Image 1 (cartoon, rainbow, N blue to C red):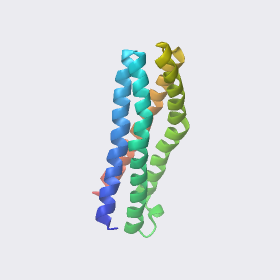
Image 2 (tube, rainbow, N blue to C red):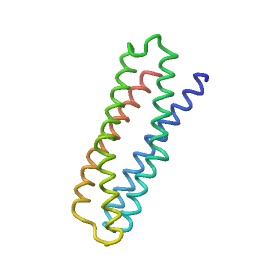
Image 3 (cartoon, rainbow, N blue to C red):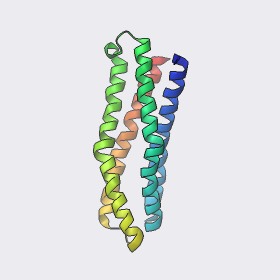
Image 4 (cartoon, helix red, strand yellow):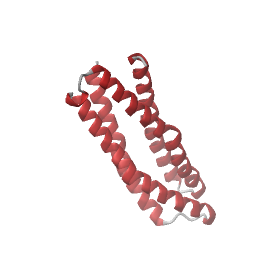
Length: 155
């Protein structure tokens, strides 16, 4: 595969990944403000689904094509400070996502299933929302920083 295609697919991965995590945070925040059990149930389900449809494929394209590009451009891309910084910083976002956000989303999804039947949102759901908002914000800012690193070094 040519470097041109790798760049295209890498950027597509960035768009899918960042686009989904930013837009998901936006509409989840707006849904939470309604405090409507059915709206929150629907949105909580969509958060999980869009992770599978957009976030995961975006991450796979981003990482695979980014590494292939780095390996084609540099003899040892691990010796290139900005590439290595980008990799480790992006990995930090993945750690937050895997160990904090996904478990939080799973707990929220279970609660949402219950309150879709009872029409009562328990306080624990809102505690989980605050955790999701805090760590979700960090998990958005970290890859935006990586984007800044990549764009400023690649130009």
